[in-house]
Image (cartoon, rainbow, N blue to C red; front, side, top):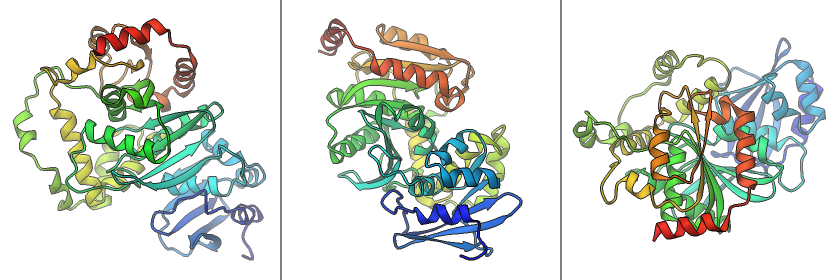
Length: 400
C-alpha cells in the first residue's frame, strides 16, 4: 500500500500461509514502527495484506523502532533475534505474533519454525515445531501456553526436533467441557499427539504442571519417552491440605458461567505479579489472560488446578509410591527462589529416585525463561549423554 514503510511491505510479500496457523481463519496483527506510525497485517484466506491501522482492536501487537524493522525485513533470522534481545516486543497473542514472524521469515528449509494444528483421538492440538534431530516434546505449565518454551525452541532447534503443544484446555488447543484435566488425562492426550505425528518415542521436557505430565508419561507410558527433564515440576502435596474437603466439593464447570471481564481480571492479576508489565512476565500474563477470560479456558484452568491440589500423595496408587517405579532417566531442575514448588521437594525426590540427576539454579518457577543459558545448556548435555546399560536394567528391575 502507498505510504507504508518499504520494510513492512517486504515482510508481507514473503507471507507463507503454510507456516502460520490462524485459528479463526483471519487475524489482525498490528505492526508499530515506534515514532513513525502503525499498520495492520490483515490475514484472511491464506493471504496477508498491509493496511493503515484504523482504530479496530488488533489480535496481537508487534512493536519495534525503524532500524529493527528494517533489519527484520532483510534477515530471515532477524525477527526472533530482535525479540530475544528486547528490541522487538510482542503482546496480546504470542501464537499470532510469533506466527507472523515465522510466516514472513522467508525460510523454506527443513526444520523451520512452524505453527501447526492437528486432530487426534483426544482432540485438536495447536503446536509449534522447529528443528531437526531427535524429537523432544515440550510441556507447559498451568495457566501457560506453548509460548513459554519459545526460548527453548530457539536454543535447541539446531540439534533436536522441538514440538511444543498447547495442552488440551489451554492456548489454541481444544477445550473439552467436563474433561478431568488431571495428569493421566494430559499424558494420555500427549500420546495421541505423538501417534498423529508418527513419533514412537521422544524426550519430554516439562515445566510446573507440564513436569507432572512428563512424569506421568514416564510412569504410565515408559515406552513412549526416552529421557525426562523436569523444570520445577508440580508434585503431590506432602503437607496436610486444610482445604481438601472444600476443594473436593468445588465444581470447575462453574467457570463456564462466571462473569470475568478482561479489564477487571487483568487489573487484579497484574497487581499480584511483580514486574507483570514488562518482559516475559508480561508475555506470560497476556497468554494467561487471553485464555482465562474465555469460559472454556477458565473451566479447564479451575479443573487442572483442582486436580493438582487433590492428588493423593501416598498409598498404593499415590504419587510418591508410583514415582519410585519411574523408569526413564530423569533430570530435575529446581529454582532456589521458587515459591510454588519449594526446593525442599528435592530431598523427597532423591529418596524416591536415588539415581535421578538434580540441578539447582538461582531462579524462580520458570527456569527456561529466568535462567535460559544455564538451563538449556544443562538440557542439551543431559539429552545427548549416553545412558549406561546397567542403569537402564536397574530401572526396569525396580519397575517390575
